[in-house]
Length: 224
Image (cartoon, rainbow, N blue to C red; front, top):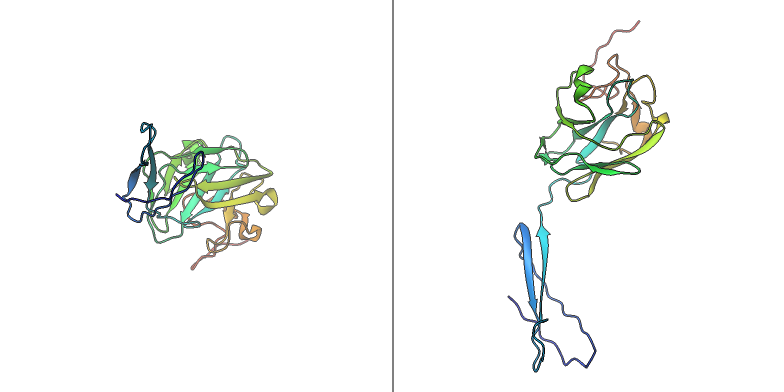
């Protein structure tokens, strides 16, 4: 509880009062403001209420990154987006959203945690398991339909902050043959077109695991 004093106020004039609050509790914080004026003839309009929400900021931009996109799947297969947790934090995806150039949709209302160095796949259809051996967590969700020529993909947290975003074009890769668009390095910007390539594995995509175009510490393959 605090009190702020003011000077004389002329008829039909207004004034501003400022006060600072440094102690908040996590959750909803309510404030009651009351004005007291000598000889006030109407005291029924002297109280106002306001509130603010205190939250603990956990994830920051690029803690989670868009790592693989299936925007032009083969006939019958679903579109999907893979995220990778490149941070050292455990991140709860409750109330996360995915946006494209036209729409923004909430893709998860439950508490689902992605631990450091883990992948998670948002898929429009659980039939993804008919085509790929996905070892990571999967969230079936309705998200904006991805265009095959170009589109924007934005990942938004529960506070509507952009955690990662990009605007891909078909010449980045993944535009034909039912192959995914894969990120080469999680340390290079999502918006750098040179950091993306078409999947080069026989599986055509790598949902829930390290991308085929990502440099491996150990990698052996057969060539003809």
